[in-house]
Length: 146
Image 1 (cartoon, rainbow, N blue to C red):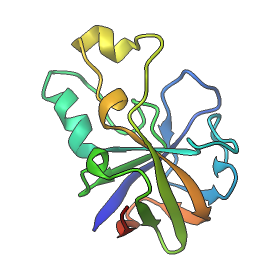
Image 2 (image 1 turned 60 degrees about the vertical axis):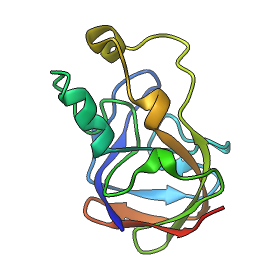
Image 3 (image 1 turned 180 degrees about the vertical axis):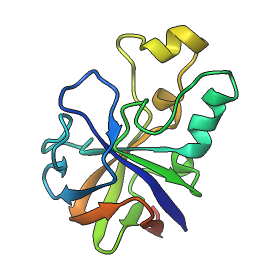
C-alpha cells in the first residue's frame, strides 16, 4: 500500500500545481477546483515521488505538483499498473487507470532544464468510479488489476 504525499490543483491549464493538502474527488469530474477536471478519461493525474526523485537526482529543484499532477504518491510504482487497474484512494474513492504516460505536445520548462521529464513516461491518469475526500497521508492501494 502507498500513501498520498500531496493533493495538488491549479487555477489554469499549463501551470504547475500547488499542494492544497486536501480535496474532493468527484465522479464525472476529477479533483474539485482543478483546471484539468472534466468528464473524460484523464480526470485525475498521479505521479510517484519515486519518479520525481529521478529528476531531483539530475539536479532539478522540483517537487509535488511541479509536473502538474493532482496526486503525488509514494510506495506504488504507478507506471507499471495495467490499464483497468482499480485503486482505492483515501477512505472511499475508487479510480480506474485509463492511461499510462502522455504525449507532450510542447516541451515544458523541466524538459529544457534536464533534457527529460518523467510525467510523459511515468505519470498515470484515472477516471473516478466513486468519489470522496482525499488528503495528504491517506492510503492508496491496488484493489483489482486487469
